[in-house]
Length: 178
Image (cartoon, rainbow, N blue to C red; front, side):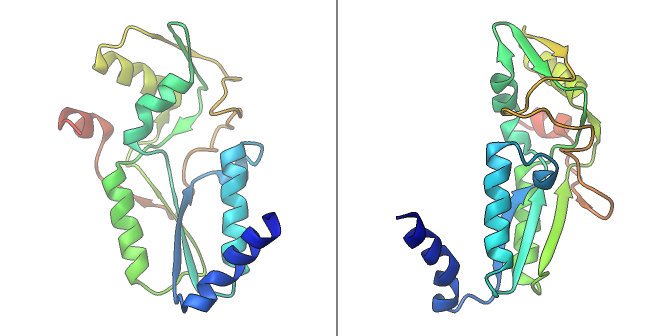
């Protein structure tokens, strides 16, 4: 069964005449390959790259829309354990705009990274976000805190030089009721 599934994904685009494969991925996949989701994204990207179809990969930082879920996943009782690493989340609407621009452009045969306008400490970001929500949970800085099963490094979750940065700040996004 696995062979048939892989064959489908390796040949379907060519058979359909796809001229530009655009895929959304996550900033830092290659820097945290022990994370199951990130490992799966790496495999997806490798399949796309070797397909022979012109492609563009859009690597985005964490979406504002996922912030509560990230806090919930890091919660044990009334404590949210967050690593004190760099964090640069982005509004989902800005990711959608970036994907749209890439989709109508020439294939990159590579990747572009997109991130939010503010690079902050992840633990401080969550401490501020929970306070703004009136959430009584306590954020504890823990260098060994896991991010969905893996310990992130200092720059795992932030884009590199040359990234396209959004303009919407989390505080503004949250107060706009999104």
